[in-house]
Image 1: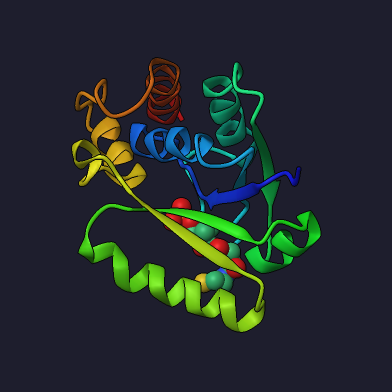
Image 2: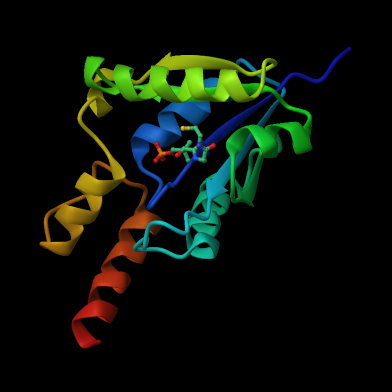
Length: 165
Ligand code: PNS
């Protein structure tokens, strides 16, 4: 029997309940989900890539179908290196569609084997993004419903650190 794997790539700065919803549903569709965390030289994230990966690993520590890896460069090159050509993306709203289709077509132009599976996010998370979470946390807004407890704690420590910096 062939092992059906998929890559769920992103910045995850930090992982939110919206991402977790997509991953949890992808777990039921695939034998293995590789969560690929980008090191994007063009961006200064709130959490380092190691911190972002640690927060994801903590969330999925009891799921043997989930692996967490870092990558940099083109996603299609990473996919080729893993020999996994199925990508999973979450779609929150029509506003995501333009960007997602552009990314899919670019990836496809670079690598003919690429397929992207889109999962519609739970309506509860239709407005949720890592940037909204960062913004709320920075302004001491309540993010309890948007991220798991350990991510909430990490956000609090991060913003305490930056106040003392
Ligand atoms: O969390 P995000 O920002 O929605 O994730 C976007 C990501 C990391 C999947 C995308 O930016 C990406 O694939 N970056 C790698 C560079 C690349 O392959 N670019 C070509 C496709 S646009």
